Image (tube, rainbow, N blue to C red; front, top):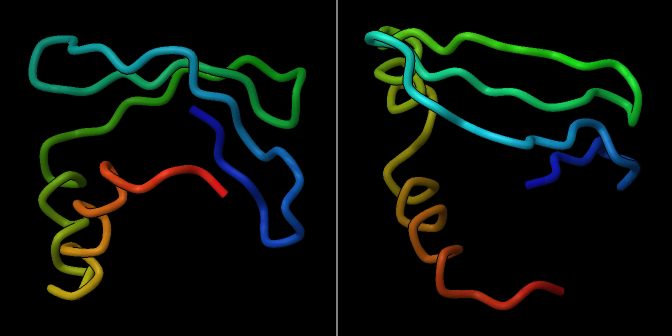
Length: 69
């Protein structure tokens, strides 16, 4: 999975998302060269629903069924 900056350049390539204890571990590279291992804690996963409107959440779910452009 790739994350892009606002100018459509590669920001981060996610190579894997795994579980470690009660956390999610995101591993990848930032800007094509810097390896990163980020920890996402349960409170942060819950917090994402607080910053995302219901409409945005529905849109995110429908993205699973959309083709790439």
